Figure 1 (tube, helix red, strand yellow):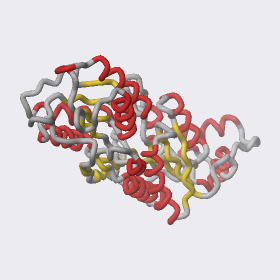
Figure 2 (cartoon, helix red, strand yellow):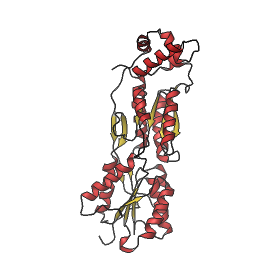
Figure 3 (cartoon, one colour):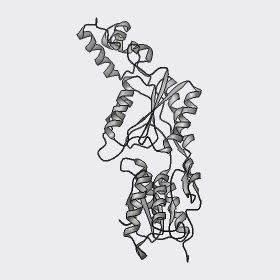
Figure 4 (cartoon, rainbow, N blue to C red):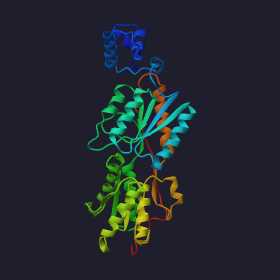
Amino acid sequence: MKNPTITDVATLAGVSKSTVSAVLNNKTFIRESTRRAVLRAIDELSYRPSSSARRGFRRAPGRSITFVVKEAQNPYYAETLAGIQAAGGERGYVVLLASSEGEYGLERQIVELCTEREIDGLILTPILNDDTDLSHIFELKRRNVPFVLLEAVRGVRASLVDVDNAKWSCEAVRYLLELGHTEIIHFAGPLYSAHTEERLDGVRRAFSETHLIMNEKVLVQAGHSAEDGYKAGLECFRSRQGADRPTAVTCYNDLVAVGLLKALRELGIGVPEEVSVVGFDDLRMLEYISPGLTTVHVPKFDMGRIAAEILIRQIEGRGELPPERVSLEAELVVRQSSGRLHGS
């Protein structure tokens, strides 16, 4: 189905194209009854005006993409942003960055503001939890605003670029099992991220392949930052002593793992001699971390580049394009933070 045009709006409202343009540009000489008729037609057709049709509206200069992230200080997004800028810059797009800081209300405001200002398209890492209202994302689809997701949203048929988080979280646990570890726990991520549940699903999958029991002791609610990992690490390893102490930990992301390493160092617990630690993401900053962190490498630059390429095809394409779903390959990178369990 082709996107509705200003001609379609004019025909449905029974007015001229110039009258529709005047309504879009908030001209005061239009009668209120005419204005209402045009707005009803726009709503019925889910018409998204082109930039030329809305010159009177404030909009970002030139062609623009907004990248909406969940944590401004997370270096994961910086590496993804570099890929978006590489692809967008080649086609003359300015890339804007906005952060919801894990707050649904702020994410919704960002998306609505971008829509009002006629941003050409968005790349989203959406807030997802039990209380999330996805109406702003469904509104993007209703108004034919191009967007690409970097985390899956159930029930939303949209373009997606990601890795198989469950698969690679499972691979991380399998690796630790092969090293002889059976006392394995998982430091889980924030409740607002779909990746948190997907990576936890991977842990469950690995446990289901063994005689091990997935109980409440296996899951530690941590978060997304190094500070979160540090605090969770201190609390966990202070409270669990002797046979109850884990010998291996998989973490939601590298930042949590880095915080955990600091906690273990302060507690005098050797890594990997006493506890093996595995992260997720493979951030560039890890080359400055000691011991080197075993982690799952996520191709973040490629993720951003491909997402931008898909988005630009949507923006510049004629008619409605079918969603594209791309699952990139990840890789377990073994470094010094993990080792074989003594005696195994």
